[in-house]
Length: 85
Image 1 (cartoon, rainbow, N blue to C red):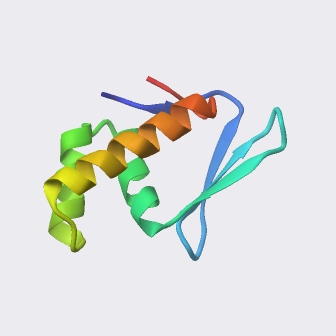
Image 2 (cartoon, rainbow, N blue to C red; image 1 turned 90 degrees about the vertical axis):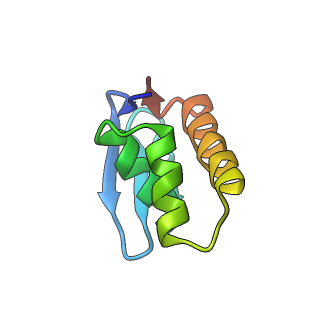
Image 3 (cartoon, rainbow, N blue to C red; image 1 turned 180 degrees about the horizontal axis):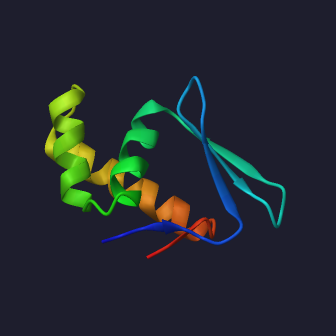
């Protein structure tokens, strides 16, 4: 699955992770370092499974938990209207 930010959504790296700004509504979201790591992989064209592998390689998390976290993040970004698939 390839994700891209919806037109009108800006992305900026922060000291803590990534901030996303919906320029249409003025709302913003901040992703922690782990969420930022996953989003970067997906925006570069990586798959959810690549993001899961990256999390299990760099964080103390099992594959099932990482898979749930990646799925949850994608669903939250999608339901917020921040991304397109």
